[in-house]
Length: 138
Image 1 (cartoon, rainbow, N blue to C red):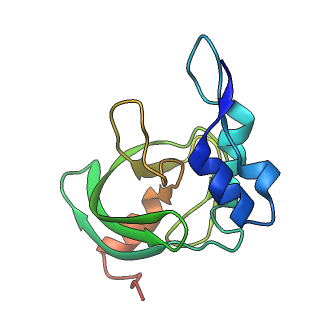
Image 2: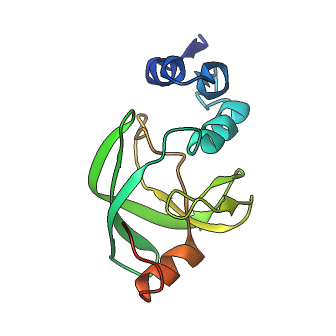
């Protein structure tokens, strides 16, 4: 049964582009629709700018991020893991464009219910500049 994700519907209705952000869970495979994942990744800066309060390095490939958004909730010390961008998007920290294949950090999760910011990304180069003191969070 392919039915809309309720949380994406609520967020979609709150935004002007509800048809772009709604995602669906596909039958049989249980995987999200690829088009909707891309739309969510691009929707990060469409009027809903997340606030990143702190970043703390745990290992070379993981950081703890305190993240909040007025419509998608907040996370205190959420683990973000290094990987490659699967879709184009926008860096949640700098607003820079993210291309498919760029090295990025994304929220780490296990299980069936991903966090509301599961599609957000931070460019690894931006995190490196932040850790060297060249970029300051406001």
